[in-house]
Amino acid sequence: MIHIKLFERVGIFAENKDIAAKIRLNTLISALEKHQKIILDFENIEGATQSFIHALISDLMRKYGNDVLNNIQFKSCNDTVKAIITIVVDYMQESA
Image 1 (spheres, one colour):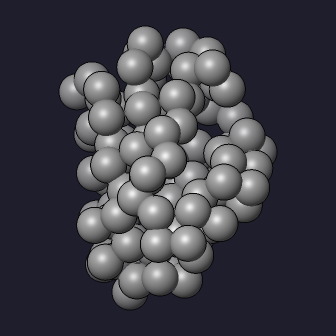
Image 2 (cartoon, helix red, strand yellow):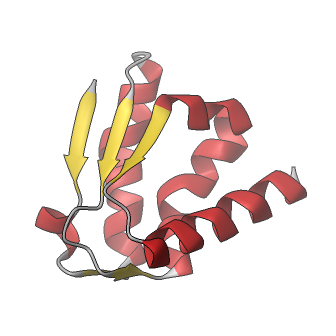
Image 3 (cartoon, helix red, strand yellow):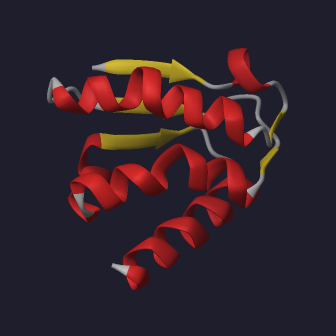
């Protein structure tokens, strides 16, 4: 299992889609290829943009299908972050 503490990489507000893409490319894809479970830890993060979450997980959903979400746990999300994640996941599932 791989545990990614996003606050250390993005600070209090997750908005930089380039950082999200780097996390996806450098960490998430290799973990999934090794069949590892992933924890995306949003502790201390007050908010996130839709573009950040989209850059973080949308390509994974395209490449591996919606079942990839069974291997990703979103931890310590406040209601604002949960809502953004839900928007992106719902959008990706509808467009599949």
